[in-house]
Length: 347
Image (cartoon, rainbow, N blue to C red; front, side):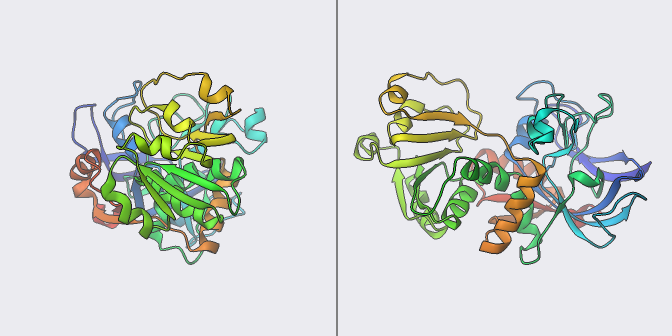
């Protein structure tokens, strides 16, 4: 076992603090990675504070990991020491169910092993995330980071990037489509960049009028301030596709009425329950659906797409000693648009 410096939450009410975890020595199929950067996802806060229930403590968050291969097992064929790689939201799955065989490991019927606050496939061993100096991962769940993407700005692609790319790709967003991105945070800003790179005409919808300038700077073609109720009637039947990134409770029915006939609204946030009326769906044959992350194959596709189109996250790089302050700032939406930890600060 490899003693590894980390930052952990001991309880739901504890601040994150220095902690030591044990990483396994690389087995025949394993890759040992020295972590260089780790993005900070809003779900890190939810899970570290047990807001979704069932959290496992002590918890080392972090599932947007960029690092360098330090060592590989005897059967590893894809990776060599020195390779620049990533680890996203999953570190294993059953490999046998229909979802896994389809390359959709995020929907593993036996339960994927998520990168932290989860269990290995033995159902016993807890997983620890990227707020640490190294991680050991099966070679099949390691991702290649293409040249050309700044490494700190690549980290959020492994969650925020794939969370927004997957529904855009799955539902066939194409050049010329009218796409609305609801919310302009860590997820929303990636949705704007990716939809624009796919050739869509992108509009940001936000309750904060002050985000207009940021939206246009990120590449959006238009901006709608949704604090004005008239915005919904003025833009009825306008969009082919809505990517809803908001995790606060909001009125789905109002947004559904912004869709054209046969339009699709995809939820990637997890708000509290919201009443849903049938009429906005029935009378325009609209669709309301959801999306999680993507499988390993699709995540690699997303990374290659970002490299080809010059897409990367907008980040604020912090030392790990500022993580608790970063959590509080995130709760105030005081970040443009993703914190990334420089793990060298932990060494």
